[in-house]
Image 1 (cartoon, each protein chain N blue to C red):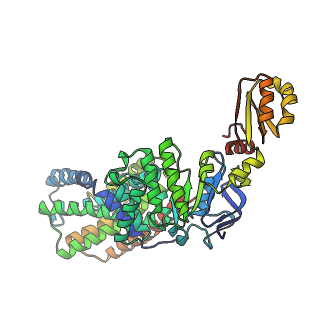
Image 2 (cartoon, each protein chain N blue to C red; image 1 turned 180 degrees about the vertical axis):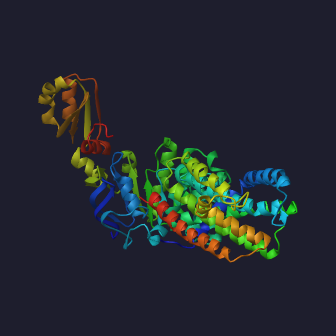
Image 3 (cartoon, each protein chain N blue to C red; image 1 turned 30 degrees about the horizontal axis):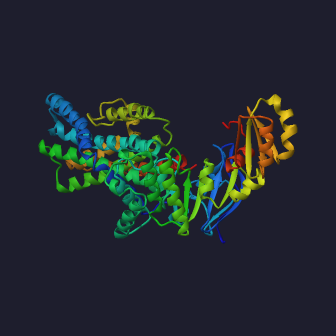
Length: 305
Length: 255
């Protein structure tokens, strides 16, 4: 797979604050690549440099063989951006929003009209074409942002937390549309705080924290490597740890104590759960390991502010 | 500086949006200047009588015309741009397209100049209906051209203010401390001749003084050599403020 985006020791600094601290990654053409991380991890700063609205402070960043910088109109011409915030034009209707946007990509009028009709269908907003933006729900606004990002038939789509604040139906619709685009060969660059979203969409992810990449890999493999297949969460007071761990630790591949919960990681939880039953610990949840466990293990389970 | 033809598309976006507000702004941009014309022109004008052989209104109309261009263009680049930048995040979506920050800002200044021209032209039409006519059709065309220049100048100045405005309230400093004094010390309502020397000097530093002097000369057809200087001041200020305004806004938009 040929790389379409390559970063080497990429850094971003705002005054004295290092938002991105020398990260390197490669994104292949047609891949869905996810940046995961808590607030302030540097995800948005990174993708803003990729789509050329924020200057690179240090290192190199190449997009489609071109150096990314704020005056690179050629990169912007082939990139579609689904922003984190709703940046629709409130003074215009749904259709006018798309028409005005199409101008900036030099799409001829008739062609723009054809694409707008197709895209409104794609995001299921045909009936709202003449509505004002304030008459749309948040989910509809987010869908319109997707349609807008696709107007220029981009090679690369940047989706910066595309489902924040949406209900499950709207979220699933957006996931389906993004998967469809990926199926058509578009490269997807996603940032998210939702582990489920990353698991649903991404071929590869990096977990970022404080401007650095902590881990890179395929979601399923990361879970297997870092956590295992299953997690047992036992609610028990910390003073029980010694007694519990003496019995349970040999049956697990790792454990962690956070607040009122003892986490035990395993590849095959049957022996472990048998022991849990023997010890009579009813406040126990046994579940498959998820990307969330990896994320919390790497970035810490405490609050990040 | 990275300008392109996309400035036109930014202008076009504003045009599409404006069609919904055209009626309300129509009234708003007419009321204040009309108020000046009636109170100063007709009310006070009755006491003043003639000015250089012509009724006072011939003195007043060109000044009010330019003032209305100044007000409209300034407010467009302050409140209008601020809302688009901070509240609606429109600039963010513009600069994610092949348009540059420079295109976006220049497009808004061009738009402000157009809005200014629109208000000024309305005033001119009102004046014509009141029987106060520019000397010739050439004068009308030159006034239109001048209004565009003045619109770009005040739009750019306001852009500079907007580039470091933390919030809406900040704009009242500019309008109260800069625009209002300019209105009274730039010879809009009365000639500067009777001011003490230092005040006359101060007036020379106000762009409105020069704009009004040119407008009045064009309106009444009394061209003098001194106008060249006035025009030079306008052009130089315009280029400088435009470039500074664009640069400062870019600094605010691109981080």
